[in-house]
Length: 328
Image (tube, rainbow, N blue to C red; front, side, top):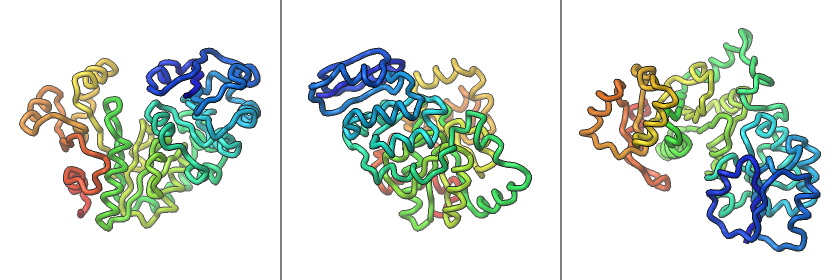
């Protein structure tokens, strides 16, 4: 049985299907929170980080980790730059909290397959001032005229493919993993990178990297200069064209996803009429692709059906890689 503590991210944890012995809602000081389940045996403490008062304070999170059995904690983080900074995450790891995610899928994964130190130890070796690129702080002005030439050397001769979810949850992370895996299986050295998230860590592959800033991205490119292929899950990275040879825009063509996309931006497809648009996790038949193109005004670059992501040699992924110029 488990204890769940929710606050601002209640809607996310309300979707979690696990046995619950106690559920608490609100924001509390560490001592006040832990007093609510003294002498209560539980398997996991699944907690929304915003339930901890002053959760952005490293000393508060250190006290929390020391006062609870950290090995039982699964922490749901939010999207704030401080919480996603490497200093904050490293503080969690140093104090024994190895299981944290920003989304429901990650929480589910960690519930069934918890991390050990070896899975998150890489965080301790990254610069503590690494932060999300959207904060406008460290890394926001990293590229300048003096280092553009070194950047060009890092990407010279590589195929760097950016994947951008045009509709929500269009499968960029899963596709990144499958593309990298099949490239390496075909003898083409390749790595995968995600920007400003930490979903790829769940695949536990030394070919996949999570970068929280441009500085980290450039370091990964430099450290893996022998990789002929780089697949980047962009997550709305604002300077993707500086790094990518090609950017692919992924669309999950279900009615709900398409409708939500248009509501967010009625010109979404008009703006992509000259770009590579790929239908991913698509039940659209090849015969229906033409109708989709007429309705949206875009040219479909590829139509990828739902694929078992455990398949290590999916023909559809190999075909997609060939279209992108890989000799596979």
